[in-house]
Length: 325
Image (cartoon, rainbow, N blue to C red; front, side, top):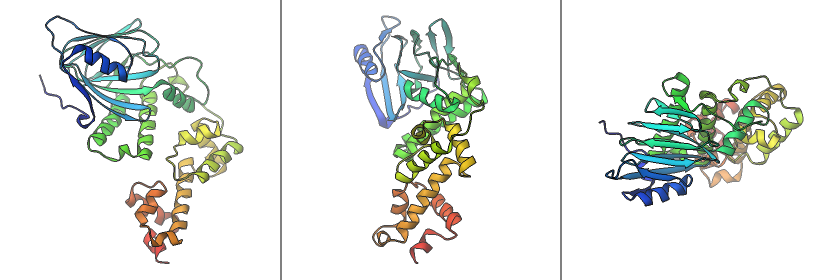
């Protein structure tokens, strides 16, 4: 059996060989559940690593033995379960699948869940708040949901769309393991949005056919509200999702409204506001006691090389040239 690297090792939640402790600790993170070994001589060796990124949580969980898990209904969250090795049997409501490294599972949170994880079956679990996922879907389809989101139970990780989404998750895990920019609030929020949006676009669900249907561009008043939000707090990690929510419209509607009435996208407008604030600071007394990098970071720019190029494209000179004026 191939040895699978333990993911998120620096974010260990617990390690135990005690069944009751494993049940109690996992329940604190997810929900109360039944946990039993499938035979009397099975010995647990549980490892749970976990890192929270807003409303998305990454988990590495390995029980080290054959276990029977009965959570019932998950209710408040979606859990994408991806075996890194071995296999599991997943029963959600009336559906059942055999899950392995090529077939993830996404149980319906409003149906009873019953699972058997076999020995040698460490899994990478992506926890997503149900409320956040549903709000993101409403942004994508431009209307309120009429029924809960129900994904197909099996997620075929060999399809191009699912592979693309899995690459996003793996990139996020790798960056967390390396202590990268993921833990920065602005980058974290962008990644969270990518993970949720990517899941909704790559895995079939009961609203899939509504994504991509035509919506009306946001009215000028809604665009002005989003502009005011950008002008008021450009240093905050504003996403298009945040702006659309403030304006009371869907993301697609806001994007179309910006293109029609402003001539650019919401993110381009926010970037220009931030560039103008940086320029104001570089031309002010603040620049005498603060570095260009600190000023750029304070206005939401996290990649200095890209920032310098964008600044030059916008103003025809480098930040250092502005500073020497």
